[in-house]
Length: 162
Image 1 (cartoon, rainbow, N blue to C red):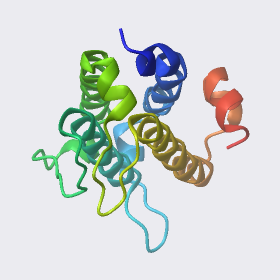
Image 2: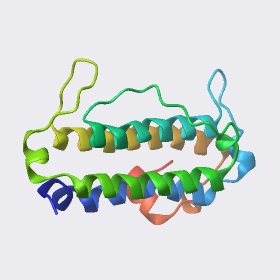
Image 3: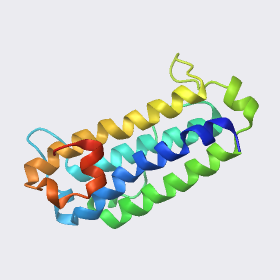
């Protein structure tokens, strides 16, 4: 196992779990909620999963583009489908990260539109993308009337009050 995975796996998994926490309390109907002049909550979660997919590919190919779109048009209307896709992303990312050699970890960079972060920076930016999206989601939850006590305790520890 490489040093990147050893160093980052625990906090990575805790961060990824935030997506599952929020999907555990939402209903399919709530996914269709939209704030004025904004996408639905389901679209926010689908678009984020599409971005996450590009991060998985970036650790596999050492190149990241943000043009991936999931082919299932119903994805943003189904918490079960979103939950399953997030789980696949989590497992796939684990496999890709564990397959990296120590030489990859120490020397490879990811080509990102003229920016070339080392893999340790790339994993950090990936985690930040999750946190940014979960902050957006918390605004939707508050607008939906979800009370802090309705959220899992771990969510409240990580994200604070809705």
